[in-house]
Length: 297
Image (cartoon, rainbow, N blue to C red; front, side, top):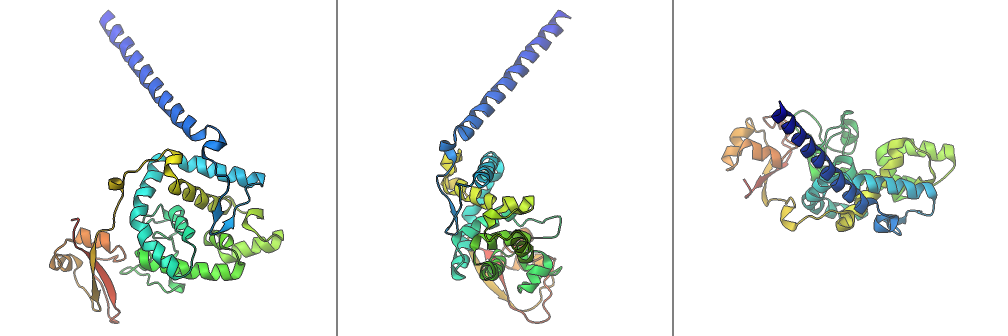
């Protein structure tokens, strides 16, 4: 009986020690992240060249909140940084082609964490388009082909939307907010509240946080060391080299097709997520480009 009590006592000490070590390490990280605004809070910041008015108390506090939240989402933020090395080289030249400020790549970050996410409402892809909106901008969306899953096509569609929004509002910041709340939704609030900037608007919680989340991820990803993130170059995810195969007819069996190209069905789908079925039905003779990786499998 004494031996059992002794073991129980030792176990309690070990458990308590473990909790103490965990608490200490957590406090240390929080101290590094939270210790004084001078440690992490930027003296100035802008979105797409439009200055954020940090002299306004609630603006400063809202940015502070998003910086602290995202700096402490260790695994999530680290994964975003790794994926950005693969996604940004695709997104950046398309933004440039359409004369969209480079900062909009961080909008894609907060929309999906740079994954082909699926929202409860039905938005899909890195840029999170709803089906009807995607079709209106010219993307094909059905059970066989869903171009919302194509990073190139969805980035081009996002650019078209953002150009329209900028033309309507005259502000890239409001254009970004409208990506979340819709152009009509933002315009209605501008007219009702009789103000003209995002930072003066009272909006729903999601849209109120939206631009600040973009700013926070921009700041953290541009200065990762400042926020306690260290990512070695060999840990970043990369784009594998591919050859593009033009297809203008149906493919009855994608698994067989993949084998004929020297890969398998899984690899084909990973590199062409817009192919949503086990086959490609193409009665109209539309030209599709299928990516076939050259290595990495």
